[in-house]
Length: 352
Image (cartoon, rainbow, N blue to C red):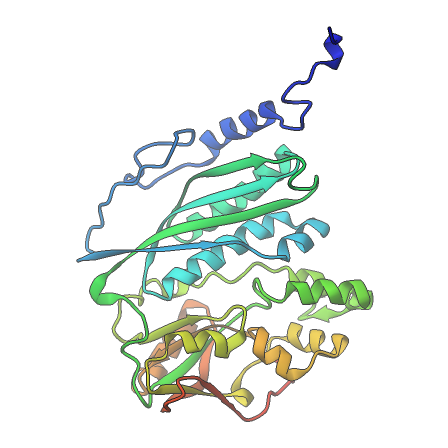
């Protein structure tokens, strides 16, 4: 018979059910679900959401899943793990508002090699706050401890959202016309793309950490949470004046703006009109990254692109500025069978 101390328990295998239970119990008080359409609370097998959408005719559900990429490695390395919760949710919700949707409910998944209560609580608190900032609710999710699968000290995050939009008010680019204007909504930096490049730069050229970006340390600028655009756009998402919206993430302006262009039309984007965020200049100069590579893969300071008619463009830009987001003209829609984004001019690296 094995000695009592030699007996294998679930805890000895690396799964700490007590800590998991403590975290779950804490969530029952931390997550204050204010939406009356949420019919149950944390701890149920699944989340219940009443399909009631007052004022939305012919409602269409909009679904999306997202993860924050390798930015989470830097966030942990530099003790900014709360940022990654905001990053993930802001990116997630940006991807559905470009369809005209109002976010309703979010589910998250946190997978770790070893549960650390304080870290999990910090991440969930950030996720919950990011949801509240955008008028939706974190309704549940999964916390999974997987020793032997995920290394200790590493976490893997993902999330999903459901939103709703009236069928007649879906924004899918189909209303875009020749002659329409392309408006840039400024980013606050890298958002959630380009972090494999940044990590490589830090490893090979650590002097980049001494660089200053808009008066702050490089790493603080690099880890700044992804801009949430819903607070700026929520009052106009159902307006026919908004003919198209593109969330500029990986693949840069061209790779994302192309996704909303109707057949027979292209976008002509003026590189010299883009107000480049200073962090991109630092990355280019310190890393020696080719300009073409920067343009093809990074947002360059444009976090979202909006398409509006020439008549509506000035008023739309004034409206967005009044809400607190910088908006300016960067291009036009042209007739073109290639259905792509064409660049003209040269980037002005003076930055904004």
